[in-house]
Image (cartoon, rainbow, N blue to C red; front, side, top):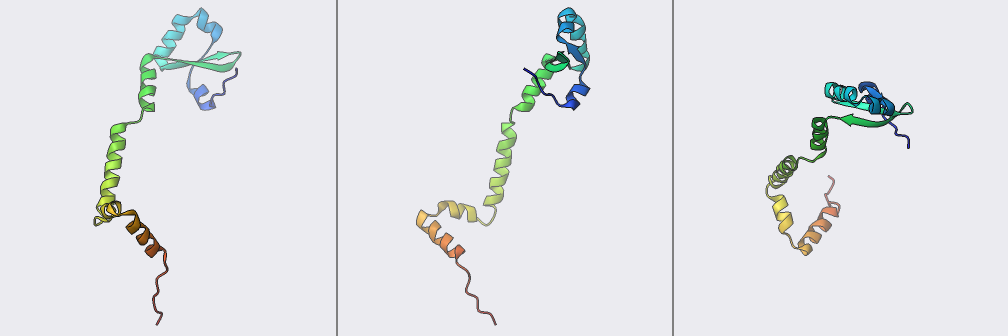
Length: 115
């Protein structure tokens, strides 16, 4: 299995072969501590990224959606919609028949007389 890695990532991280990893785990551990992560290669191809627990936790937190922020964005959007003279509240309170009549009325071209 060959992993394709962006060149920018391969250039940013120190590289360690699997053989070097087995032979020198302490040295690799120091490199992880110094850089936050190291790139482990197999047959000169990127195979793994070894990272510190703290770096892993940072990635986990970054991947999780901030539900509080999303709720806040939704509430702001709803407030903007409701702040338009109560039109949205009126629309949600309409019966299906009234909603249909309003849609038909809005779709019909206006009959303005041209002077």
